Length: 241
Image (cartoon, rainbow, N blue to C red):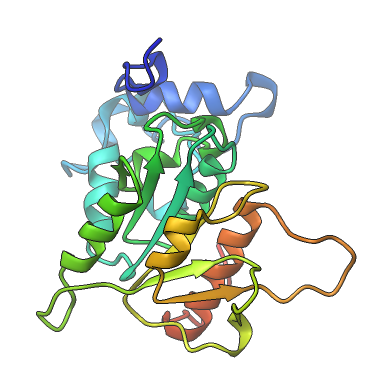
């Protein structure tokens, strides 16, 4: 099948399908049907009638229970952070799903997949329905997009911040991450390509203290995103849900 051919898992599905595929019957989590029956359903277009009737077992935070996918995305769009995450995908990197899921957790503006269009969505745990994902055929296309991307100050251009443990890189723990930027990660095992490294405004590495030479791209993306969050995000004082 051609690389860009539609895949069965690309077809739009109802949130109830997401509920069923995520939670085996013996291990269901979330909430059941809305208490009180149809007569007590909220009069609010954000709520999904199927979920109200059958329950919501999706992996979403409690404030989004029973909401439609479109309503969740619209609400997230009002408060996404101004950093982007890009990852090269020349050999169907299995880490991309994990990167998408983490990007959703940290409310990244967008995930950019560079190279092959297809990627393994299983690791995303359906979060790709709530996270904007953009495809770029090659590094040059990503660079062109980044150089013209709008900034909050009305200007254009987002710096590319590479994440790879290569000679000449700077420790991410010691670097002041830009508020608006693109965090760029390479393929598992090979790291950033030469073209990607050349395009970066700066390349950072994650300081390690053990015997392994590297951590996988999914873990590296999580560390990099959390480094951004620690520097720029407004962290609520309330305990975690």
